[in-house]
Length: 333
Image: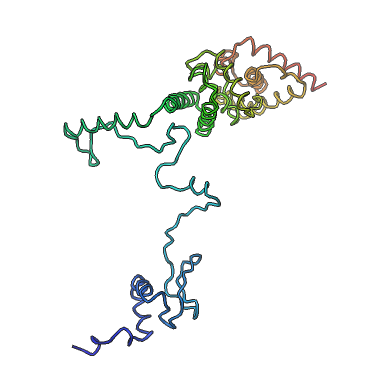
């Protein structure tokens, strides 16, 4: 054997250590850890500079490793709640599910992870597990109530095209109503419908009461009565619906130009200055403004088409239309 075979670790020169570090960064890091995080050049303390991705000597400044992999998250969080919200360990929690999405769902398909069909004994076992899993998910009447109501909220919000943030707000409102014991004497469908209506108005994407009633399982009068009760008891800050918020949706459904949409908003602003909007339905005002704007910009539309889109009678559109014209004349004078 050569003399190099019997060379001990203590006899190795710093140059030899640097050569080995250049050959393999991973081996250098491992040896630094075994040596108590000492510098191979001066045996000084080794520190990790996370900002620059380097491992350097605190005494002589030797860069031992560079371009290290940052295994932390790419996002930043400034408090614990934001950290929990941005963390991607498992599915995110949501108020739209009665258990906030923390429970386990067992797939209805009788197949394993490789897509192979289960045997008869395994199918019976999985069916039994599904049954007990469903029972444990809704262990008391409150959770069963919440599960039914949140399912109704999701169904109605999807039917009228409301975004996810509105569904989340409606779910939070219903949870508050349930915690404050506002449900006795009122139906689950009625309270959940009023929560959807309130959440839509609070988010600035209002839907008319008629639109909400069309997808609900309760009468319009009950929705209105329950809505007033929930808003009063929970002290919700719901601003009156602005007619201008309905204009883009109506104009888009009628395929009108941007010019007509802007003209309709201008008509509504003039009507507000003249006090014409006081005591009038915001949906009727928006529909009449869209119809009047279409005529003023020479775009073809009819009262019947506007009535169908806005779900309001043609008589209301004609009455509001004449009021808009009178307000315009007063503005010109």
